[in-house]
Every structure is written in C-alpha cells, then in structure tokens.
Image (cartoon, rainbow, N blue to C red; front, side):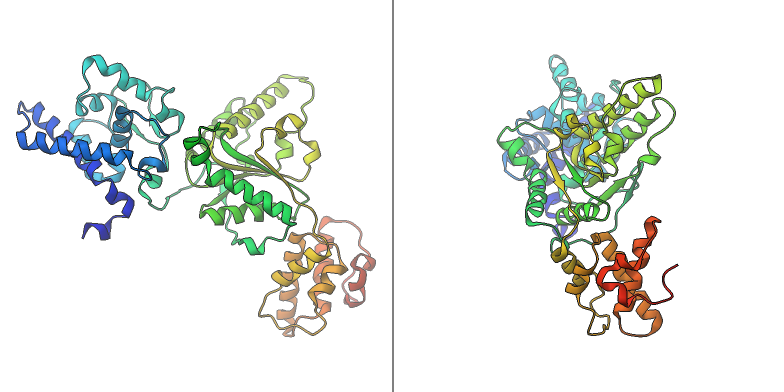
Length: 445
C-alpha cells in the first residue's frame, strides 16, 4: 500500500501533488492545441476544494508556513516543494521548460501552470519578491530576477513539511559535534538547568509565540554560555541538541575568517545560507574574540574587522535557528552585545558536591575499584572542572587496565597529576591536597 511507502506527512499532501500534476497535464495539452476535457475540469475543481480545505487544517502546512499566506503564495510554495516531494513532478516541470538545468519551476512556468491572468502577474512576482512572506520566512530561494531562472524551496523546508528526517551534508566552516548527552548527565546548579530549559522554550515554542500570538520575531534564538574551560558549555549545547533530536555543529572560525577584505563575509554567508531553516544548532566558540569591547579605529584593517563583526552579528540575528556563543571571558564582551542574546547562562566551576556527582558518573561504571576509591573523597580532594574530571577519570581507568589491577587511589592521583600539569605550570604534591600521599613516588618530574 502507498501508506507503507510514504510518511504520514507525505500522504496528507496527496491532493496538493495531484492538483499540480493535473494542472501541468492540462498545460501540456493546451500547448498542443487541445482543451481540457470536462472530466478533467470537474476533477480539478474537486481537487481545488480539497486543497483549500487542507490548507486551513491545523498542523498541515503549519510546520513551515506563517499564518496569513494568500492562495497564490501557497500555490507558489507548493510548486517549489513539488519536485522534492514527488520526483515525477520535477521531471514533468522539466519537460514543460526544455533546456532548464533543474527540475524546479521558473516564474514563467508558474504563470502558465497557475493560469495567472496578465493583470495578476504583479501578484505572482510580488510573491517572489524579497519582501514577500515566502522570502522573509526563508521558505523559497529565487535565483536572480529572470523569469526563466528556477525557484526552489529553502534547505530543510521539504523535510520539515513532510516529516522526513533531515539530510545534512557538510556545513561550510563547521564540524559536527558527536557527544552523547542527556539531561541527567548535566551537572549544574538547578537555576542554570532552568535557564537551559527556558532557552529550549525559545526554540520549541517559537511558532506559538510568533506565529499564533503575533510576538516579535527576534531571530535565532541566540544564547551565550560563559564560564571557565571545562565547565560544560559544549556539553550543555549537546544536551539541547539531543533533546531536540538535532545535530550540533561547532563553527570553526579559523576556516571562515580571511585576511582578504570581503572574503570573511562571503564565507559567513555560505555557512548561514546552508544552515538557514535546517533543524540544527550552531555553536560559536570564543565569542569574546568576536564581540570584545571595540577600541578606536586606528587603521583600515580595524574598520574592516568591525564590519566583519557587524556582518556576523546581523547574520546571527536574522538566522532562522538556534545559535549558541560560548566564552571563557564574559567580562571582555562589549555590553552592547549582551542585550542581543535571548538567554545568558554562566557556567560556574563545580563545587565539592558537584565534583562528587561528576566522579560518580565519569568513572567507568563496570570498572573494578579498590574500596578506598570513593567519589565523595575525590570530589572534596582537588578542585577540578568537569572536563578535567572526565579526562582524569579516563586516564586513571587506562592506568588500571594497563596494570591489570582494580582502580586504586594511586591511579587516580597520578591521573589528576597529569591533568594538572597540562597547563605547563610548576606542580607540587601539595596541589593534590588529600590525594598527595597516594601519588606514586616516580610521578613528579
């Protein structure tokens, strides 16, 4: 049966695609000098009624469209989506516009298929203009102003509309973060967890607040996560992404920022154009380097650097999707930028209780341990961040595995010693506090 092949979302749109198919067939016949039969006209009238009723139903087109679209705007969007929803319609469009490089319809073809009267042509092109709801809401992409250039749905629109899994390729200048993350693994003060859940509301309830209630659309949302390295900023972003079922992409600014004037803006545009409307979270690290307090413009390069930051901020604010900026140095941020974030979450260094919970969760659960390896003792002994505890816990586990023995306090002490030494400073056994007696004698350098 057809329902076993299609998703439920795709099956609901069957009348839309049948109507477009019939309109295309009637157009092909008219080009051959043949008129539509009475049966075809009757069927078209029935389909038109079904489509109009379908578009009024809640939860149908709502997945992507704002309220108040005109019938013509719905028609344009449906025709743009049709080749991706029903490939046969794409081939049909291509047959009706010989030489077209893609199966997507052109404005000229839409004018014919939808039987737009000459006096209504301005309405069609108004639906394709930059000021139209279809363009403002990132639903369609129009290549230039040529009537014979194709228009297509924006990236991710068809998947969201039909309930298909999003298929994402490489994102320019970004890398996929593959960190398994769950709410219960997030070790933070309860008020910070509450703030993360509030940020999630900005994402999941935007359609209600903006679409149904008429609230102001501020883009994004955009969140700022600040705190020392290793306090869980990226992990929290991964938790949010996992809760949404979306991928998390960390933007590598080193691949975007260019010494050549204008190239940085082009690279940023490619990133945001590819991500626009896609179900994903973008994370920018080291926001303090981007949005630091700006000084005087002493030379031309300073002026262009400020222009790049302004361009990035404008793209972030207009981006349809969540963006998270992280920083280790919030005090270096220009206060003018802070007001542009919907949520600001400070990630503190974990206290002894939080460190105990981290040791409990990060030591491999099935690893054999000696009786003295107590997470409460470890949590109180040395002031480490969550990231350092994760590294030390794994290092200790490998030391125990290499020795072929259960995990001992000696393994943990050595692992913590190695972790503390990563910043290159001079170490003393006293840095280990109560763990110092367990440090193997050969460890200090």
